[in-house]
Image 1 (spheres, rainbow, N blue to C red):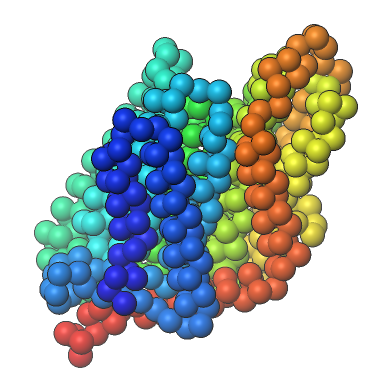
Image 2 (image 1 turned 90 degrees about the horizontal axis):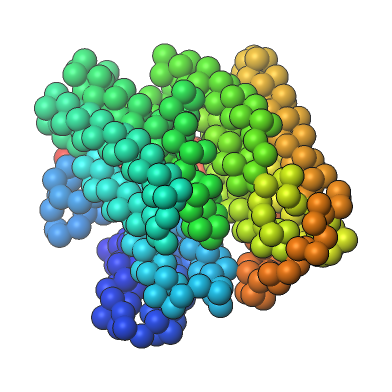
Length: 496
């Protein structure tokens, strides 16, 4: 069991180490990277299978008893997040395969992706605040290297914006962790859960946790702290943008969900604040998208608005709402990464990602139009795709809780999302290309990229058409979030 607990982190770290040992051989680096990401995906799927059967893995590394040492927990939520990380990691590597880029560029991308995957998986399975900080640092290093890869003034400017704001969040997180430790004497999430749930947490510890939530809000790109995301994501290489869009903000959302449900399982002031933040994030994000004229800028603002839905589920704090947040996480990671991937192919074929310079893509490639329509309609919440069910559950949870304003904002955001996707469809696919001679001049891109977007589109269809089992899994995950068995059991032996 101990080995199984560490595998989500051990696999990408060992993959990175092996790839570094053969760094001079780009083809071998690529092969090792593919093998490692495939193994990570299989491990994640096995963990989901175990979690679906009711297994919660928790333990201490190095033989130390909690609250000392490194605590790890894998429950339903962390298991599915590891699995989806494997999906998007492997999809990214498949997308970049045979791209017309220098061999050393592709080699470095493989290396940095593995480092990033290690940080992301570490954040999903840790049960200790300090180690969560460590994994945030690891993924920050990997993400900065990826966003700056290739250089250029525009890319470096966006990378610096990304780095400065995320470093600020990281420093705030470290300060908050110090306050929590100084006030409570522990950073173990299980022990903190015991203290807060019993009403024994001091004001200093509470202040530290609130600052920690502020740090996570920056990383999740919540209103009003979201400006760094649309200023940076669109400047990276397209596969990197897709990887970031799918996973990075979700680490912040995951940390918010995990900490709030652990410490405050019942609705309180924190949830009330998060409710209004979620509503503002949905509306401001989607209005920002409506004002953009580049595909990736539009999609970047939609990351912000869609994060609002996930935090809405956390803010409502009912079992159904939390299940909706889990469902939305599963759906959105796949859909958003896929939209960036499709956008990359569309920009390549049209010769630009500016809507004014695009057009004619439907006539040129009906298949690409279909591959765009699936995630776009899912993002907007059109039935029977995955986004419809995710939005439906959250809106129903809002109405059940009597929070009509949240349901209204969720519906309104869905309408504006559909309008934004329609703008890309009309400008990029339906209208004639302003310079027809340029359309398709640079080719269709490697077959592996098309396979990637088709596979992710198929996953979106499967989630939508098989929403029942996914929702059952999400409901059980919401129960675990509230009861926190893996985390509380870490300390239960010592407390009772």
